[in-house]
Every structure is written in structure tokens, then in C-alpha cells.
Image 1 (spheres, one colour):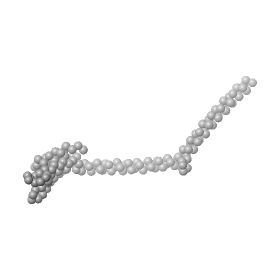
Image 2 (tube, rainbow, N blue to C red):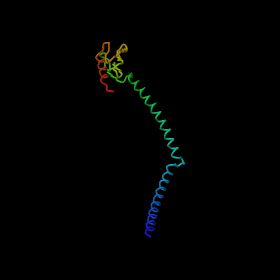
Image 3 (tube, rainbow, N blue to C red):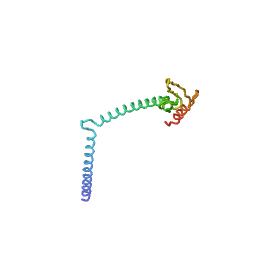
Image 4 (cartoon, rainbow, N blue to C red):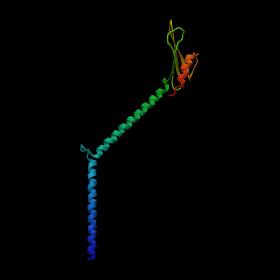
Length: 155
């Protein structure tokens, strides 16, 4: 008799455990069903496949973008990025500051200095080469000032 009572208690306990596990399994099946079906009945596997394909495309585009950025940075090394401009009146009695000195330098302080002198009889332009921040040609005080401005630019 005691044996039967113990067995009945065990059967009831196992029945309770079975009901609890069945409910948990149903909840998991519902969640899995939601993951496996989208609004247009697309399976999760199809969605993941599209995500992987898109990821590959993004990686290719990222590599292309990095390559382009490297090319742009290489081009910027030789581009004139530092400028100095000084406007002045080359001749007394002329109206306004019509003459100018313009320094154009790259990151290595190489470039040109353009001096334009405007007078009553015409306009004259002189170009001087700048190497490592210095000119082999003599510079006017306006040229020196324009070069100094360009050299002091922070890029």
C-alpha cells in the first residue's frame, strides 16, 4: 500500500513536470516560428543569407573607399595647400593696392611665389620657385611676408 502511494506521488510529480515542460516547449516553438517567418513568409535562413551577401558588398565598397582615400591623400601631398597673400601699392600715387604677392606651397613647403606689379604703364608678373620654404631668387619684402604667412599655416 505504501508502495502504491509513493508511486502515485511520483506519477503526479512527473505529470506536473511534463505539463511545465510542454508549456515551455510551446513557447519556444512560437518564438521559433516568429523568427522563421517574416511578414512575407521569408525564413530566417533567407534573411541571414541576404545579410551575409550585403555584408560582403559593404566590405568590397569599404576597401574601394579606403583605396580612394589613400589616392586622395597621396595627391594632397603635392597639392598647394598653404597660401599667403599680400596686397600692396607698388608705386606712390597709384590708387588702391593693385599689386600682390601670392605664395602657394604644398605640405613640404615647395611651390611658387607669384608677384604681380601693377603700374601706370602695365602689369608685370614674376614667378619664383620655392623649395623647402626658400627661394633661390631675391624676394621683395612683400614676397617674404607672403611666404612667411604661407609657411605659418597649420594644415
